Length: 312
Image 1 (cartoon, rainbow, N blue to C red):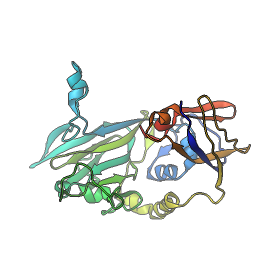
Image 2: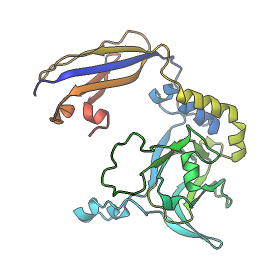
Image 3: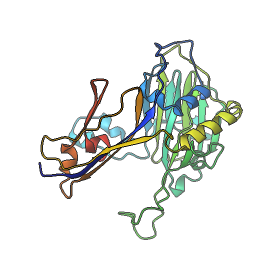
Image 4: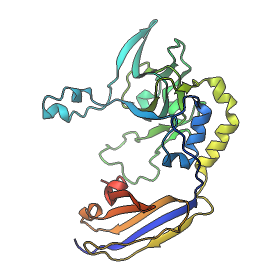
């Protein structure tokens, strides 16, 4: 491997406080309150979830992949305008984009903010109630212009920092997305519908074990959690902990060589990792460089740098 220069690792160290782990407890009640508390507590990322759950996704992926009889279908890539089914609701037709049975919670949601989606209505039906708990303008609901505000819903990109919009013709509308992170728990079922073309969408949700107690989302419950919502919003927007201690190392690497950073002993948490590699035009160096983390004598991370940071 050719020489690499300026390999820099920065580890942010914050004090972490351990608390006892309990096996899945059916007496625990999952609610908007518990989910909000979880999303603002980074310790939850390092512990097995309790109650346990499985993660699922409902999206506009190309259903042709299901056929799987030849390579043309394996790589089907028309990942838009796909949905679960259409259903009649009185005189109205609704496009179902999520349909889950059992206790669970919506955790994330993404849509593109293209102009023709601006008049769509999204409806969320919980626990087989024929009346939707949420019935809002689709774009406004996901981008933070409805009753759910920043940082739980927002425009994810407004192209302000983009010098060029690749492959878009002159005069084409800017390409923007919207992200939604407010947890929406349900005890028995969740069905999400649109009243017209679905285009692209992606909804992540959890499903808990049968018997898990879940307090279903309600607009009243949302209003009652005004103080908690404000507190969680502040935590999500806070800068790094004041006890953040940067540790770094830099140098040239030859094949089979390594750079090492020793973290201080005691209970801590890695808050952030930054790596800069002078790989020039040889991007394979980003895969040939491996990041390894050894915690308490056990290897917990071994990954090519490019894959670890999602760089491809």
